[in-house]
Length: 243
Image (cartoon, rainbow, N blue to C red; front, side, top):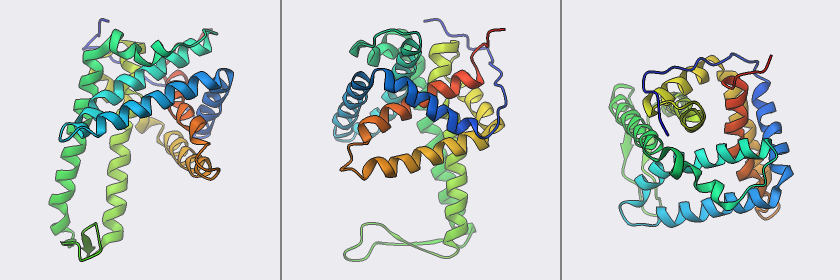
């Protein structure tokens, strides 16, 4: 697959309620072939946990592979919308079509997260935040000082970084953008439509809580809807609309 490293894709600006519509549209797509979507999501989760269990290399590998599988779900959603019967091979479409740029998306996103963590660590003493070693029976270090504002700042920064990734895999495989361009245009679209993205993320988190209630069985549908929402959001903001 050829990528245009100088291209730019302008996104539309939509109302905040579209964030919920992306989820609804994703649910309707999943409902057409629910068993196949569950199989795709379950297979990906098994691969994810197997890779994560690899000593030392597992954690970074999951970051590198996540955009490749995300692109597979995006392409599968596009096929499902066109009435194509999905196969297991759809999960691995990103490996065939855009392996290198999708890997680079994962690496760049991980680099941005590491930079953000370094920035937050540098800001902690400036804000009067002190970290104490965990005491007996505790697993996490204890923070003292104005913790609430610091946590709010951390959440805001993580949300901004998530905007870089939200549409990036779709922009690579559906618009042919290079990895940095995809992250850049995903961020621009996310900033322009942050209320819709925030509403979508909040509702997905709420649905996750509900999915966990019936012995976690709802996760079999929640995960496919989560992945397909990236496609329905991309379509609303970036896809060429027919006159």
